Every structure is written in structure tokens, then in C-alpha cells.
Length: 115
Image 1: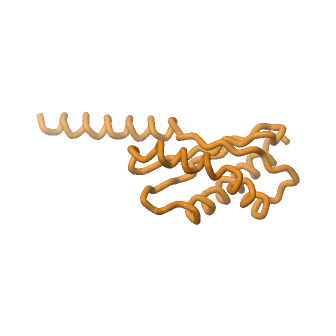
Image 2: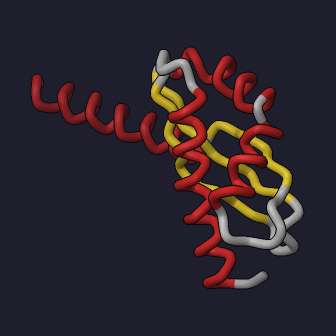
Image 3: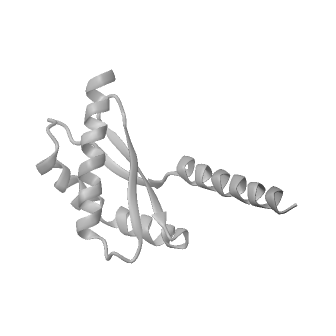
């Protein structure tokens, strides 16, 4: 699968995984699906998530990885594709780094205004 079709599938899966996580989570952490990265042959999908508070990241990833089969079953009912890829969950380090940079910029701006 190429280009626009793969992008559309990723968008559809991102929404469905978000619904799955919202339905299955214990609501102690805010978990956001930031993006899905599907292999062109549809064999695998990596679901990138951000977690708040960040000290719950490991627990959330462990929970999601235990529920991979359920997530895939949920996808089969929600996503219009003949092939549903195997699922892997990961923390979105790009988003985490962006948040860190934003915090550093806020800190540097506030310290320069004090002087």
C-alpha cells in the first residue's frame, strides 16, 4: 500500500486506537495516540502514544502491550482494511522531546525577563 491510502489507514487506525485506549484504560493517566506508523506491506503498525503524567509511561506501555490482541480485534471491527497489521505500542519520543524543548524555551524566556 502506498502514499495517500496508507496515510488514510494510519489516520483511521489512530482514531480507533484512541477509542480503544479510552475505553480500556483505568483513567489514571492521560494517554494520547499521537500517530500510527504502518509498514507498507501492512504486516506491522507501531502506535505512538504520549502519557501524562510521564512517570506512568512504563505502566501504560506494559498495559497496552498486554492488550495487543484485544486492540487488534477492536481494529478488525472498526477499520476498513482486509489486512489488520500486528500491533506494537511505543512512547512517542519526538513529542516528548518537543515538550522538553518548549519547557526549556519557557524557562529561558522567564529567566531573561527577570534580569
